[in-house]
Amino acid sequence: MPKPHEHKNRIIHGPDVSIPFTVNQGVAVIMIGRSGFPLATGCTWPGHHLPPELWAHLHPDSVQLLTETELEFSVNEADLRAGIATVRVVAMLSGPLTQRIKALPEGSLDRTNKSTIAAALNMTREALITANNRRKNSEDALPDAFEDNL
Image 1: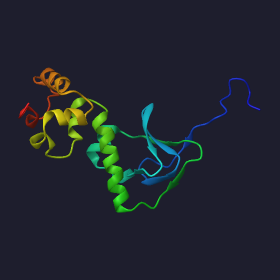
Image 2 (image 1 turned 60 degrees about the vertical axis):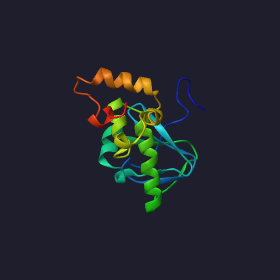
Image 3 (image 1 turned 135 degrees about the vertical axis):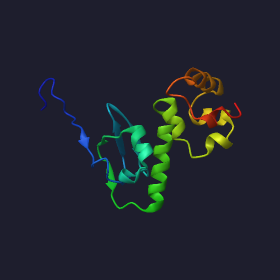
Image 4 (image 1 turned 30 degrees about the vertical axis):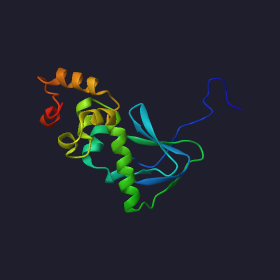
């Protein structure tokens, strides 16, 4: 019987964050500081295969597991590609705008409608333009290609 104020449920630590895996059952949580993002059954964490720019953007530091989670550590190339794509989506939705824009696929700023880019970043076109205008003269300016076709 737990003592008063004693936590019955402890954190279940997963593998080192550099190790790739696929979630066979349950949910693994990639921790980023005190928050994180979930990977449900079928999702793959690419571990050390994650491109350096995404690793630098997110700074993943550990893996935690929900109870009854099962992982598979033999990960194939297709699963790794899918895992990297999943993490890219997370990167496009989190962090400072300039880093989120850098998470977009290469060449997107040159050839994609800005309303579509804003939607991919979970913003309105107007909010994206406002954010860009605030940053024009700062160190945190958006890439030059962003200015085209606003």
